[in-house]
Amino acid sequence: MINTIWIVLMGGGILVAAFQCLGLDYSSAAGLVMDPSFTPLTELTKGLFSSAKAAVNLAIGLIGIMALWLGLMKIAEESGLVKIFARAVRPVMIRLFPGVPTEHPAMGAMVMNISANVLGLGNAATPLGLKAMQELQKLNKVKDTATDAMATFMALNTSSVTLIPATMIGIRAAANSTNPAEIIGPVILATGVSTTVAIVMIKLLQKLPRYQIVIPESPPKAGEREED
Image (cartoon, rainbow, N blue to C red; front, side, top):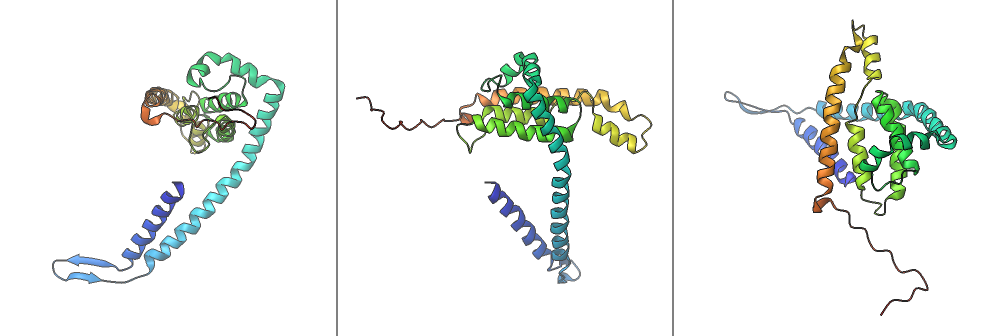
């Protein structure tokens, strides 16, 4: 599906640029006028290379952050800190993710990701979110379909409550804002509403038959005798 979407987007862009190369224009006085030019396709090519360069720079820039937080995550996991933290928020996490065992590494990664988002550390939350998705995929019995836990986590990750928008405050301070922390109140209100709406919607949609996941039956093991 993703490949199809990409092909449609890229093909549509190329077709639009090729059509613009004709330079068609209509006026009541001169009628339909054509002024061919390769400028749209040239700009399209420049945009493709510019976007590819930006994507590589973004990926390389995340390497250091991902290495740091995955390392800290491993230390927290080995030391038992993640289990202690997971137990502290266990009542809430059990209700939100009933299909994930409380001691599973996915639970710890999700807790750390949500904590990073609450503190407004969006860049730090990214590697933790990827780690959580990897662990959730291990629990997924239908590998090509997202589970309810994955959908819930994605909704929470996208709309997460932010108590301290540290990254945004830093950007505002760098831009010489007279009061960079004045956005804390609106941010808490906006993210609180978005998180509430996300949780309500995800729980309602999960109950609809259309979004129910059908788990295929496991094939009989070798040596098992079929019942008459």
